[in-house]
Amino acid sequence: MNSQRAKEIIDSATMVNVIHEGTPIYIQNVNEAEETARVFPVDQPENEKEVPLNSLTEAD
Image 1 (tube, rainbow, N blue to C red):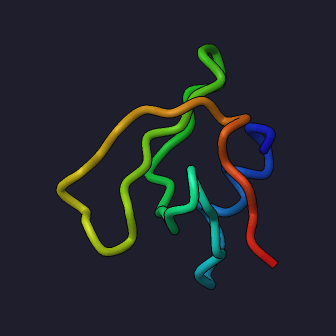
Image 2 (tube, rainbow, N blue to C red; image 1 turned 90 degrees about the vertical axis):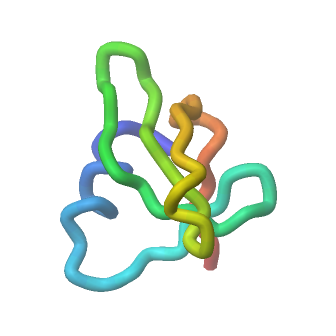
C-alpha cells in the first residue's frame, strides 16, 4: 500500500478493511519518511506496532 492510500483510509468516514499478515488492522497514522504505518489489530487496540506500508493490503 502506498502512503497516500493509507492516509485516505485514515481520513475515510467509513471503515476500510485493511490486512496485515492475515489480520484485519486499523491504521492510526502514517510515517511517510520511513514508509511505515502505526497500526493495531481491530480487536486488540492495545497491540500497537509500526509496520512497513508495503506489508498492508486492502481487502476486497
